[in-house]
Length: 363
Image (tube, rainbow, N blue to C red; front, side):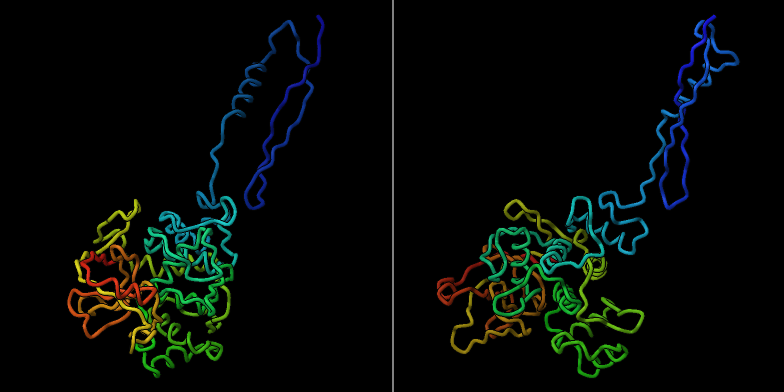
């Protein structure tokens, strides 16, 4: 009886305790088999059983965010990133990579901030800044943020959208986005001094940012670093930005609660109150009018004057036929359900007349 040697492939899986992972080792054994007789001692059954076991799929353990593969489950910003992702407020740099340790740009931060607040692009606006390309995906959100007084730019009609966000600029944007435009008058000199006293680098805070840092510390937006520094000029990472937006905006802004929804040009926008108001218009080139509002915000399209007993200053609005607006000014003739809209030119203001408009108060 002739015997031949045949090769049987046996799979050995060796788990290596090096972080996570495994390696697979293949070995080929020469086993003499009688071609004319069934292998003894159930050898064939053993071979088949080994083969079937190796074909079974082992469960794969996922140890990172379902979409962002570079955000592990134990990352300090995981929950914030996940909440913002569920709202569609997160953007990625590279496919399926959030890049949490990378600095966030000024344009990216504005985009993330506005989407977290439920402020979507619904109207076309002319550019607010000369260095913002209107074909850029972030451009409409920068315009909205400017209308609402959340950003002012860096001077000379520049915004520098690609620059990393410094902590002082970030704290200002978080504060103004939460509806506080006039923080300079909210905190007295002594209170501001006391709030900043414990930080070793308080002298490095530029003057315009002192009010915003003091307000942010008082309201637990930020608390500084363990070494008792505030680091106002340090760039903010994408993960840090997500945590701060989650803390300041999502925890204080219940977009889904006590709100209704309107469709503006096919885009759903949440609102908490609807008012019918009599509207007039103004422009700062009129005689005796200043280009600085009651809240300290410079005039721009989007600034409106209101009766603060009807609409609190700092409130974000959507005015039918006008667009996004912020209650930033008052006026002697603006009483009750009246609203005064800032226009780009004096001619527009004079031809506007008086109109009844629907005003939506945003969360």
